[in-house]
Length: 161
Image (cartoon, rainbow, N blue to C red; front, side):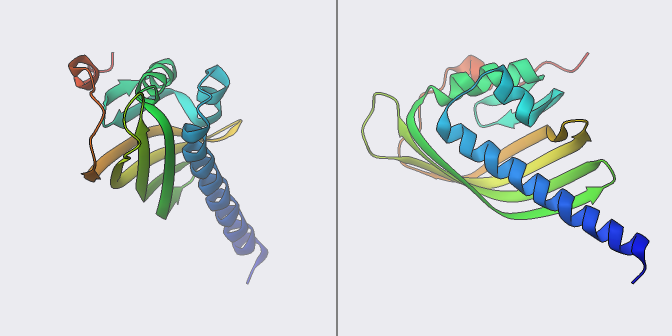
């Protein structure tokens, strides 16, 4: 094997490890519940688009606000991701995966609300490492009583300017 080919393979492995680490840390951060500007910068590009069960938002500040608001619906959570299929094309990557999320509703019963779904995440390599540029969680099934989400949260996002 020639050196250039080995270097490409090593870079691919390093990118896959970095992307997997970023997505694992992101899911863990949801459960640690510290949502501030540093959190948003650590995971998202400035122009990120996020499609969540509680609505679609654009921009890092909007993702931060929407995540805070959505996670306030729960007292405790555990998010698990698995089955990551990572496709890398230069400084861009697409990741398909599965997500299992367990939630205890805020001020509600201890009976959990559980959801399972598919994720689709776009990432870009930045000067600070890989960051999420687009994400979508498509819930395939739920179990238990879901939180009451205000209707205005789930309205479609306005088109990008």
